[in-house]
Image (cartoon, rainbow, N blue to C red; front, side):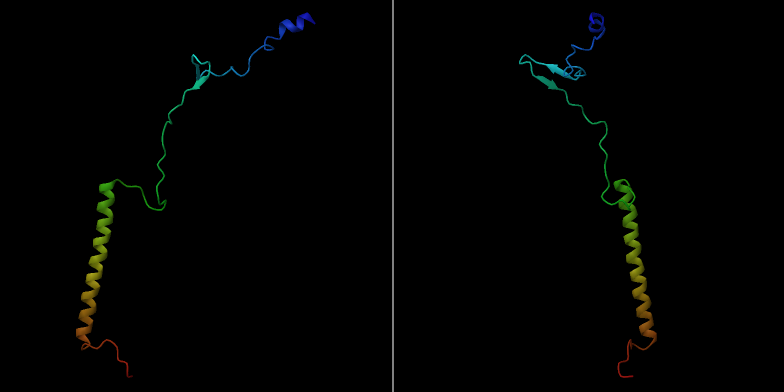
Length: 96
C-alpha cells in the first residue's frame, strides 16, 4: 500500500490554482483576471439584401438610380402630354 501512495503524484494538487496562468496574485492575495481584447469585431449590415458598398460608391450608384427614375418620369409626362394634344385634350368621356 505504501507503494501506491507514492505513485499517486496528483493526490495533493490544488486543482483551483491549476490552469490559472492568466491570473496575477496581488498583495491582498485576491487574484486579478486579465481581460483579453476581442480579435475582430464583426460588422453586421442592417439589410442583408443590399450589397455592402463604400460611401462614395453607394452615393454614386443610388444617385444614378434616383436620377434615372426622375428622368423616366419626365419622359412619361412628356409622352402623356403629347397624347393629350393629339386626342384633342379630352382624356375621359364620362357621358358615353
